[in-house]
Length: 383
Image (cartoon, rainbow, N blue to C red; front, side, top):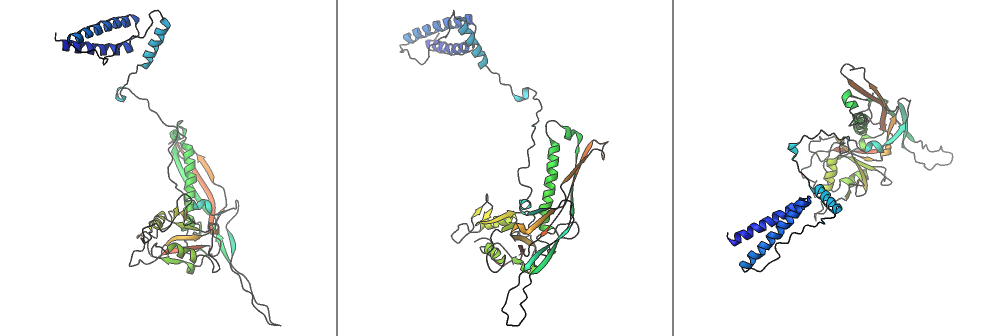
């Protein structure tokens, strides 16, 4: 046989033995592998000599690390080798058991505007619709001549009514869903009822039209505490918009602090897009602290977007003022009732919830309201 071919066969067998030794635990087989390895290495050395090739260390000698008389060492080596062996089975070769996570993945985004938590709340449990007085203005003193009557300085008052409104929610779930041990669907149903009521509050704080069984929202034409003539009209969001709003709010003696801008998310984006002539952002918006140049803002999807071309002329878009100028009266706690009687045959569990509450603006001109004006001939939203 060709010496080079035999040499290659020997090296292939040595590599094969090396792999077998690493997995083998039987002492007799290990001894046989050791002897075969020694013979093959000697034969390889002779072939290398005949070919006049210097012996190299590219093929490492195979050493079986064992002590023939040390059974404890052999048993330990065998255990380690067994533990090291793994069998990978493809997923399509076995039947995986069904697994259900015991936690619901919650809706990841806010569904209720924080406006609900920041207005003034008055606890009137057990009460009824009530009227609240507010001051519209105070008089001014004047000089009086001797013997003349004193100047009249009576304050002017106004009155606003907070109606008692009934807000309800109703939900059905199957008894299988309610009793499913893996996931607490019942707790999520109760959470949903709470969220649904708060979402209605959020909508009514702005859009409630006033009257029987509805809130009187900030944008309502029936708000007794807001003079409609004080509303301002803007056609677009530009570099002057924020200043126009701030200086139009309040009295003539000072610029009011601690006020909040209520706006649509798209209008906040329009403020963020404003640029100076040099291309720098016009406003510094802190999305974590929720401020525009230090002016607090709160997003509410119930505001029409001034920056949206679909918003009609004359529609209310934003409001600016102290949130404590709006009062929510709670006439009862949230009453949640559960029943299995209504759809007993179908195995349906029903939940119903109700709360009595109302809301209205309680301070005179407590909010500045911004209407959408007629479109301008030039686009002033980007500078």
